[in-house]
Image 1 (cartoon, rainbow, N blue to C red):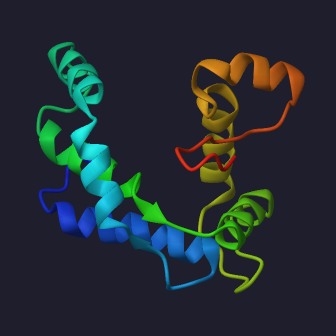
Image 2 (tube, rainbow, N blue to C red; image 1 turned 135 degrees about the vertical axis):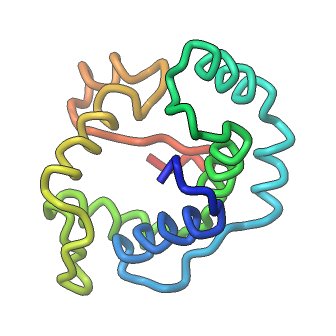
Length: 144
């Protein structure tokens, strides 16, 4: 996804995956949240430029486009029911329980849950893993 030149198609593709995991077509980007996320992004830009300087990204990647995609995907509006279905889809090996569609491969789910387990709770991830022991992802909304 990161090397695609067309940001809207990347965003639509990932949003489509979110919708398929949630079993609903109603998920959308909340523009007010997107603007707020982008406006409070100095640290994210600086980390991105640091990573770019150290050649973490492939040469073709346009950092501003990647960050735009990140801000948009951080602004997807979903309810607690949607989040619960997404969690159930991951627990079900990438199969949405509402549609029985295989949205993600079992290997992709395994990798995703590993990343969530190790860093999904940011600086609290180690303590969360030790105390709770389940993969998780925190969000600005307070949802886990």
